[in-house]
Length: 333
Image 1 (tube, rainbow, N blue to C red):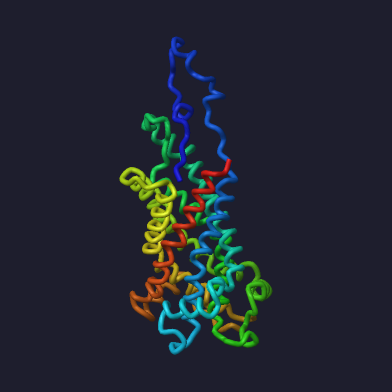
Image 2 (image 1 turned 180 degrees about the vertical axis):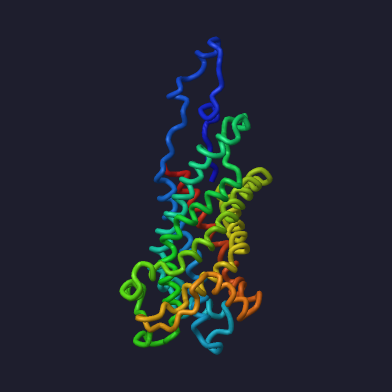
């Protein structure tokens, strides 16, 4: 998504009285104020698209992780058996909690991203470039600016993502087949128990790891701008197609750069919180301790464990999410 402002209003030039009649009054010439709500609304649709495409991957992944080797020979057999026995709806079991979470997180992330892009353009990059504003009359935020906006948006959404992902991680490592044997009966019960035992700080366990992980949004949104501009200039693709390819490829750039930090984040979020939850003894007090433990236990490969399914899921899920986001941004008044 490109953001532009009128260069005449950003860098006014003196004019002679001979031509003054041809120039509109400053009030008419000034750019219209941005609709600040658009990014937040479009982000909701991004979350819906991301879940619609990505949740079947998660369903197959979880079923493979929680089943015996005799039940499924691989992901393809798991997919075919699920569709044959349960229909396509079987791939979307348990979709409601993540749907609400993705809608909220993508709304905050993409809404704040849009806002930060505009603020950086208007108050940092246009002022710093001075007379270098393009003659076309449109001042464009550079790829570096998009990357910085991505880091700022990632930091903002981390305060929502950390508790949501923490609860999700706690539930995902409950391997007991019987619900009565599980520590948490569901997301609400998990949230209540953590708050009762460890307060808000316990619920936000892993916030620092989340902030570190989402700092790699610099590569996601920086590469998204580079790829968008490249595809626009070098191909005849339609705008939605550009959004699709740039969105999918930039998401893969993000995961290549960020995946080791995500592994460390998951280790921290699944680390026992300790008494009075009676979920085990706490192992990691610092992010550094968890990072070292991953390498000590599994070597360098430990930082990339589970990368392939995550990498394959990243393209379609995020490509469709960006198509939805950009499409809604263009259609909103």
